[in-house]
Amino acid sequence: MKGNVIKYERDNIDTDVIIPGQYLKVHDYAELATHAMEGLDPDFHSKVKEGDFILSGKNFGCGSSREHAPIALSHSGVKAVLALSFARIFYRNSVDGAFLLPIEIEEDAYNGISEGDEIDIDISKNEIKNLTKNQTYKMKPFSEIIGKIIDAGGLFNYKP
Amino acid sequence: MNIVEKILARASGKSQVAPDDVVFAKVDKVMVHDVSGPGVIKVFDKLKNKGVDVSKLWDPTKVWVAEDHFVPSAEKISAENIVKLSNFTKNYGIEKHFKYGMGQYGICHTLSHEEAMVMPGDVYVGGDSHTNTTGALGAFACGLGHTDIAYVLLNGQIWFKVPETDYFKLNGKLPDHVMAKDLILKIIGDIGTDGGNYRTMQFGGTGIDEMSVESRLTLCNMTTEAGAKNGIVEADQKVVDYLSSRGATNAKVFKGDDDAQYANVYEYEASEMEPLVAKPFSPENVAIVREAPSVELDKSYIGSCTGAKYEDLEAAAKILKGKTVKIRTEILPASISIYKRAMENGLLTIFLDAGVTVGPPTCGACCGAHMGVLAKNEICISTTNRNFPGRMGHVESETYLSSPMVAAASAVTGKITDPRDL
Image (cartoon, each protein chain N blue to C red):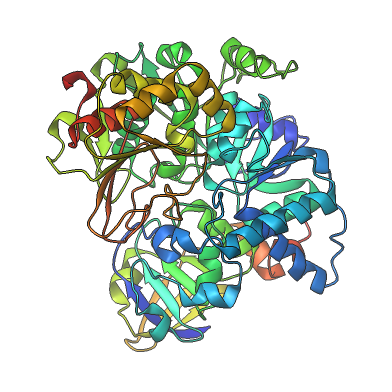
């Protein structure tokens, strides 16, 4: 899975900035996408491209349980969020709803990957290749249940 | 096993579970509101298009519905969401739908205890992150997204990784003017907004035994701000009495085993606690009120599932009695039942005499949606739970989180004020 990186070098990106509360009444996925990251980066919607990845620090997606958050990112074209850690509901919503891949990374990937770098994520090898800088990093493997739900294509396709 | 492990073992049909086990737990109660409800309806529509049978819920008697985030409707799309929700409950035979403008209604987490919707030992899931609140009744109460809630509505169960439990022990009774809100802010300040991530935060000790059920609800409510999967207090006789006073006669004391294990134990001395605030822009950005910045406030807000229970209003009334507010102040009781008691016991008169505007129950301004959002550069002190950028309005507004007593004292002076100094 190849794509370019949009990097937010900060921790605790919360769901109130990913999709502000005033849009919770909206359930049209395409419209939600137009407001993605509005609380932090008003230019996000104009710069994001299909297949992009977001890279960020600790506790990505903290705050409310709004599924609007992974929906807004996913329908903006974001295929994966790479972060040092994730808040639990964002992580769960991303996987169970099959919206995007939440990929936990280590400091080397966080520091090594820059805005605009092209990277290639290989889940079968738990590996991230930085094609721009010719570097390779490890991603933390998914737990067994998460891996199975991702493989199934979301919770509704998963047979326990 | 501790209380959470006992609940998840029972719900998954196992004799024993341990942290990191993955279980499919049977759900006892599920809640959706006017944000997560339409979200779930959208998931149902997608499933229907894929040929999945969504004609029946697993058990409509275990489902209840609240209208709280966007009532009263400020614009058409919110009004339409309420209509969608009403059609949904009608079509699926859900009888417990607390409707705005029709008697008892309010914030979902407040109804969970005011209406005794959840019992000790239950697995309770809700389409809202502050579902953690209800763990104060001795239930495993956990917030989920739309897809997961849709799955529960159709299947009656959901997967959980059994969490590790951290035990927060309060020794002694909190001093006057120090509230449960101050304790939970202190804890979040200590462990950080990811300090409870994926974990259970359990509260106990003599200080918790002494504490009212409503104060325990405040503690569990903000475990969400530490990222916790759930917050919980073992159900003692106080919880049983609280629930039976609200018509639930089948509640029973429910606790963990004597040899329960905890990953970490944190101890707090009640006598050392002081009124606190969380400064912008994070609930972990905690300061002692007497050392807080001397900012000119524009607004005081006493509302939400965190800070507008009856006890919270009573605490605010103690401070506001005979005083006049210096800044824009809004008090929104969290449910109609609380509103009514506040009226019967004279609290509303105290508020109105002080110059406060009393509004209807709603999540409105807490999540920056409507009913009193903040303008650019405005500064608010609030009994709510989050102060991220833009949370209560303009992205360049600021919110200080506090107890109802601090919010009321600050309303009187226009500055962040320790109620002991008023």
